Image (tube, rainbow, N blue to C red):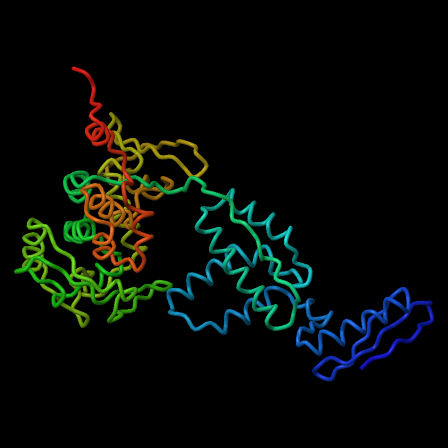
Length: 401
């Protein structure tokens, strides 16, 4: 199994063979230490728990890339995880030897990251770090996973605007501010059906019943690195659902389809000018954020004697301003430089909140939103907004006249 031999400097060297047949050695100060080490090697080999003392020298980046190459995920999920790994995990741990990564160092990293990033981002970074380390344990590169017991700090105020818009703010304020006008119906449909971006972009005529006033979510469009992919099924089994339309939106969709006939191979209702799928980042930059500025939901633009003054707040909290010759120049500058802002996905959050505040039972909200777990519905939407008057009415404690 192994043997111990004294070396010229007075120490003792333990020799043994690994399961692969390779001979290894390690030097100790005393013969007892060397003998005890060999005994431990024998026990771990017999129980299948043997980990080579040299295996932990593998760099985290090397193992992480090998682990990631074994994934069998959808392209969008894999791309998201690879981005988080590349942006948040590898810069910290890539050059570390697996065996040198300890629990305290990982917890300190998570705590620092929590100061800079949202809790959701930190949780995803921790998930990927833990996955790589668990893989290292299973591969017998390390004996213990140092991420076990790591705690992601509690809630941190997000760096995005979580404002829930009312029906009137969207229909009378945001939608009319959308330019080009052809995309106004797209935003109205997303807001008043609660569909995700990929679901509304993937909407085709066969999924819309104007006579019955409903839309069916049966397909979606995914986007990875600027390339779209048409998928003949939604995000999950629960995502396949039927959504009722307000009467006014049914009429607006009918008018839209007459004005902008469906064309292109994919038969998308809300397509670009050539019939292809819209790119989310392009839409956000050119259409969505400028519309927020026009609607008074992002930064500010004032008309002054010399033109238009654009006022915005950067990510560092600093307020800046600049004068432009025309309104649209000022709008685009604010849209580009203002930090945060109401997101397209927040249309979905607003929709779910309306349903909850109107008293629709959580299980029905979950169904129309396409949630697999009703817990998600309860956490996100049930009584999310503050309705002080409703509480006063329930308690019979309205203001005295």
